[in-house]
Image (cartoon, rainbow, N blue to C red; front, side, top):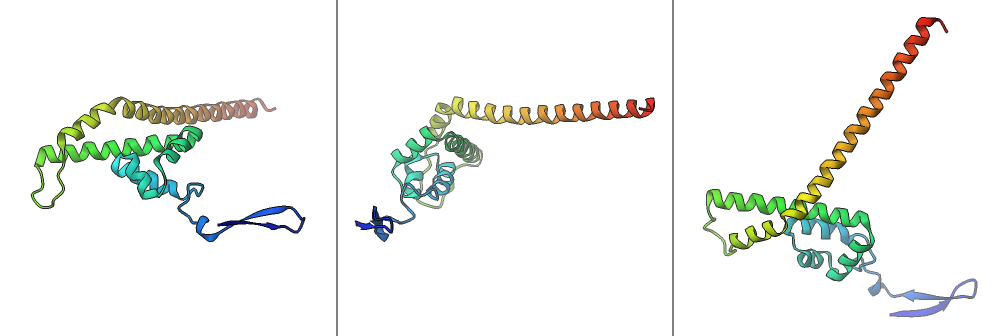
Length: 160
């Protein structure tokens, strides 16, 4: 497990065994990509945590403490709900596939979509607002550039 060894300075340092330094530990950031990809695919936090080999409580803790991860989480859920919505629409339009053992519960899927409609709508609004801000910033920069061009041409015309 862990043992204590003196360092060159004489201070005691803790040695961590190889078994405790594996990449599936929660302090390793590589779990996040697996978690978010599975969350987008399944809209299921428990399934995403299993795939990432972490406890769901760790994912929730990181979500509470890191705004960037919370935004990625919301984005993954939006993608997951979009996929679920498309799958429900496909099944309603074309019926259930006859092969395979997996049963699809349309009623539960519709209930899930309706329960999270507001959350998804808020996230889409945030995303759309970010796009609007980018457009405004681009237009503002272009107007400033045009003003500078007009001022430069006036200055050149007056001979200054």
